[in-house]
Amino acid sequence: MTTVSELQHTTGTIVLAGAGKMGGAMLTGWLAGGLDPARVVVIEPMPSAEITALVAKGVRLNPAQAAAAEVVILAVKPQMFREAGPALKPWVGDTTLVLSIMAGTTIAGLRDVVGGAVVRAMPNTPAAIGRGITVAVPAANVSAEQRALTDALLRATGAVEWVDDEALMDAVTAVSGSGPAYVFLLAEELARAGVAAGLPEALATKLARDTVSGAGELLHRSELPSATLRQNVTSPGGTTAAALSVLMGADGFQPLLERAVASATARSKELAK
Image (cartoon, rainbow, N blue to C red; front, side, top):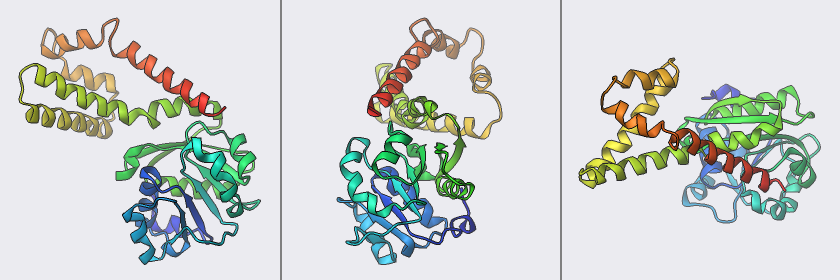
């Protein structure tokens, strides 16, 4: 998590365009980290009650006048970006840091629509509880100071990794950006399988949710490779081994996830066109 002093390094206006689940989670993290609400502008045509309530704390919501900001964060749906871009461009000056968290939207596309010094990033939904992970790639005209500011803003919601090759971002989107949905599906289907095996639905759901979240926390805290943690649960000839013989079979997890990630990667590339 970022510190109060890191966020207080900023002196200009920070504009958040799009305050849905991800944009709202980031804003919550920034304010909790000490960012002055009076320096925040939110552009959101359908603000939630939570976002509207921030006006009383000093956040400016959908102001009529625009001026070049220090940072503009683009958190709108990628399909809406080119339509929304002209209204956002007045907030972007030549030296404005433009931080995009939109899937499949390239640095070149961002420059073409709004300009500025662009950082393309892909967070994920655990950002809402400060446990997200974001991968970011900067354009060549992003300064060291702007990269540090981007890092501080992104760390308000979890870990940050930087890459230099923008081509990696489609696969990043497929693995970590979409990845929480795969984990939620695991909990969903594990509960369903428990019911099929004879458990009451409420108990199966409780066991599945707590098992998935607990195993995830163990993975987070442990320095052991995930394969070692799996092996530690698996006694030769036991019940776990019987289940893993199915999950690790020829039509099990590995080929299924490879196809899923490949499909998400391809879709991210399509969104860029």
